Length: 203
Image 1 (cartoon, rainbow, N blue to C red):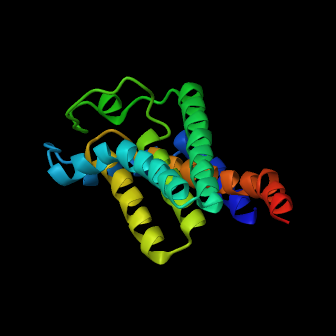
Image 2 (image 1 turned 135 degrees about the vertical axis):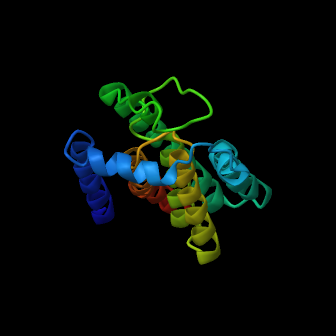
């Protein structure tokens, strides 16, 4: 629970930073990452992977639990789903509240993107979903060979959003914190609300 508090503390600091003097640092970092022709196949594939990887993590974990009749693994799948649900709700809510303009719209001729986006910039939904998935996977599987690739993938998704000119660095940072916090909150709620009941039944 302490980690959740720390994550949301950093998130609050980041929210204040969005409208503070750090805007210059924000755009300068983005300029150094975003090229005039952001056409890298790797970074475009990283961005496009956020939905199918998250979906595969949820459905794959559930499938393993059902096939092996493993109640614990089925519970892990539900925990990942709850984390994703919390993340989507918080991310969409913050986008509606902040209504931050996308970098290519705010800095035309300086930030380059291949396609237009309709929703707000803060926080990065791709990044938040990726980190919610990576953190949930690390909390449920607790294996380095799951955790390490999951976070490397989530980091690539976040970087790709800046490379493609879709988000400011603070959008990506906010998304990473929201996703991580959502997974920890789901893990905590799961332990408090569901696991005690399961243990009573087993006993």
